[in-house]
Length: 183
Image (cartoon, rainbow, N blue to C red; front, side):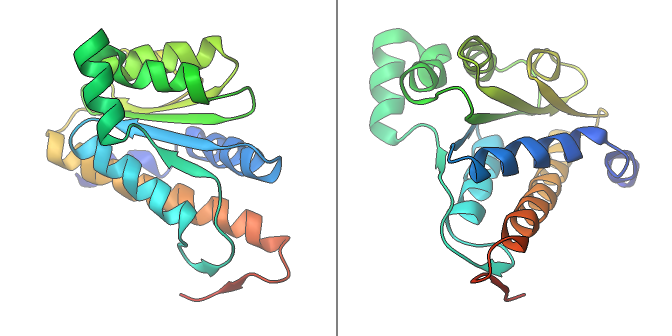
């Protein structure tokens, strides 16, 4: 895991992700995130930090985790599990929004389908994955990490998620006279 963290420190994709997410929020657009298993937990963590707060007391930001339980089961049942995120991306996201997909393997069909649909709709896409899959190549910004065991990869993705949240929030709050740092 030490090698993966060292690699992550020098990733220009982190700065790019911060810029597109902050710009989306600053221009009244929304952030959506999705994943499977631990990736879903990382997606929920990112959304929670923006809707709630990370280090600053501030207003909520427009961030949503995909899908809700009803959307997951209805879409999975009617269209297949590989369509669960794509259908919500097509129905909810607009140009200027950002979609973040998490897949350790980088080959999760439902995340790749969502990334492709978002790209087609003019939505900026960020894909967290390992080097071994297709996701980081499909996303506008691919955050790909070197091979390691899945749990370590998910943990590093969470650390990078927190780093992105901290940097986005600091940028947004720098222009908000009512925001203040709480921790």
